[in-house]
Amino acid sequence: MKCQKCNNAATLHITEVIADNQFEELHLCEQCANKYLYEPTPKAAGKVSAGEQLEEGMFSHLECPTCGMKFVDFRNTGRLGCPHDYAMFRDDLLPLLENIHGDTRHCGKTPRRSPEIREAESELMQLRNRLKIAVNKEDYEEAARIRDRIRQVEEM
Image (cartoon, rainbow, N blue to C red; front, side, top):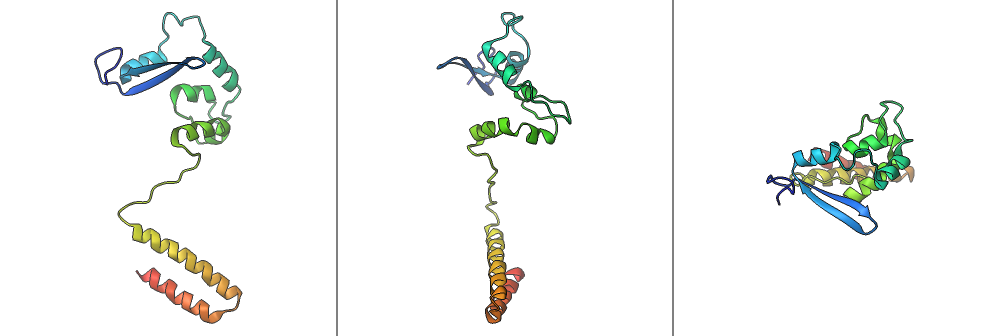
């Protein structure tokens, strides 16, 4: 897809909410997107849209005491200022993360090249839990069998 402002490839796709159920989609290259996002347009100079007023009203009070960043600055740049911002802006970041990733906690991926290591670690955790239970029940014969199995798995 080509940029709507020039002939370069469009790398950013922006959806502007104009009003309820009214959207404008823009397909821009990185340079045109920077101009669009960060340089004021003549028609917008001196005017503040309803969306900007709403955003300012919602987020202007949130400011990180460590770095001084406001949530509005994060919304404009897409970058947080310091590690404390994650806690400071948590309530506003969670819906954003859920929208982007579909969840609010990292599930991660397991590497394809070594699933047997993951299985061994899982088995060791289960065996150690069973060992604790056997010792608490004073079932020392079972505990000895589990201990031996743990040694076998650790040697693999």
